[in-house]
Length: 278
Ligand code: C2E
Ligand code: MG
Ligand code: MG
Ligand code: MG
Image 1: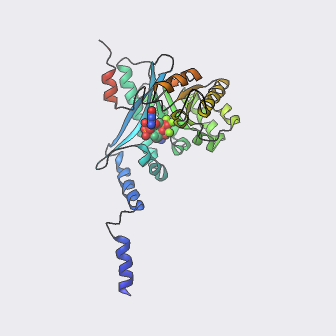
Image 2: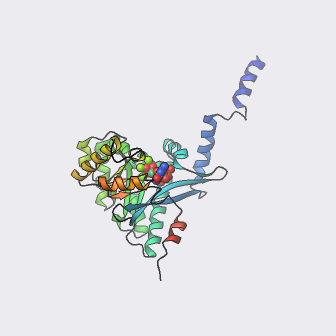
Image 3: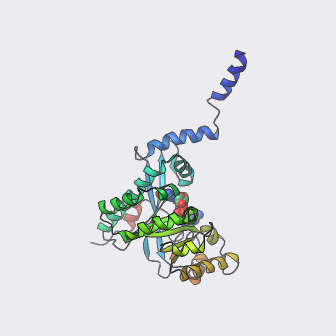
């Protein structure tokens, strides 16, 4: 019988057996340490006015400088961070760091720039969120209206009653709210009307194959019309070509974001390309 259990044990603990579960477990261990070890980075992508190309502000996008795997994008570790709750300390770090960076740019004379920060579903449901946001604004002397909090349509519509409540309290601080990845979730128009958001961000999926006419153009027009009715600005994300830029501007999008206008970059790179004279 020893042979039988022994063999099972051997198979189970075989170190070379690199299952997905084992990889996730390893990643989770590393993830717990990431904040303390200062391995998190923010990259910043510009949000530009469609009509003029002027930079209105930046969106902070999280990266993880993993000790052996290199720079990791959020889709690799965010789901795990969300599942384990690590997203809370991680997200708090993001809010603070984005505010700190904005205050650095403000001290260099960039007083018009806003800062957008993404919130995960779990963060959004945390009662402490309000205090965290307020503390960061005060610590870095950021006017509340310069901070935009992005929540996805799916997160916002998961528990719409609660979302209205949370966003109302946040916007009472003066902070702005943005509904991200719009068009991929299922919005109740009744709640959308009640959400105190300032903008809708059209999901990249509708921009990707946008032509002058066709389904995606119709959808973008419909979202623009809806946003106008609700008094919201429209941001298009994932703009990669000049043709997309022209269509989206024609269709009435106010703000554009995408590789064509600027890829997410380190703060140092952005600072270097925006040195103010004197
Ligand atoms: P998102 O907020 O919708 O951000 C847009 C994503 O599209 C970013 O991916 C950005 O790098 C990418 N992107 C921007 N322009 C283009 C383009 O022209 N073409 C293409 N192909 N992609 C473009 P990223 O940085 O990998 O982030 C993915 C998602 O992870 C974000 O989607 C956001 O939901 C989430 N995320 C990022 N940072 C944070 C964070 O600090 N906290 C939370 N909770 N979520 C975050
Ligand atoms: Mg976003
Ligand atoms: Mg988005
Ligand atoms: Mg997204």
